[in-house]
Length: 236
Image 1 (cartoon, one colour):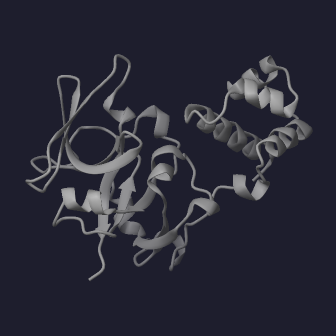
Image 2 (image 1 turned 60 degrees about the horizontal axis):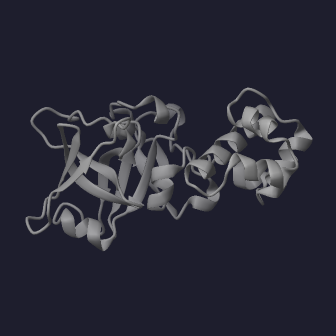
């Protein structure tokens, strides 16, 4: 990683915090001792910070270089990603799965290993916003998520998401696609239909209600779809 890479990672992290309502451009400027216009240009990618400026922003936000480094998890058991090669997939919180473009070491709960060939078979259909995001992450299914999708998903199951598939178009013809979808501040696992500017979230369990999500004027399904569920790992 070079200075430009670190600079871009910091910019992305500041934008993530602003989008999450944790920070404002004005606050960054005040805390780091910059003019607001300078920080605005930095956030919009129109102007770069100097090395000392980078240090000032990171210090003001209590960030270290180690925290900014993206986690390198790829690990193959055979060279070249051939037959038998495995890749390590980070298991993260629901919030990280929904919000973080890159998974950092401090966000990883554990890792699971998946055959590279299985990942390579996954077709992507990503919106422009997430096309540069780290593609595969996994979450643990909580009791509410599992109950809605019983018996397909058990409590504590590891659910792997392909975040480069956030289109409502069915992945396979004549077969329902299971998605991870934003619902308030949390994440639900549901089959999904899109009709009349509404997302229709369908559980598998009959005693759970169907949820309707009306899209706002400038919203698209990709604003709610976190990714396609491409693998479920349950302990026996």
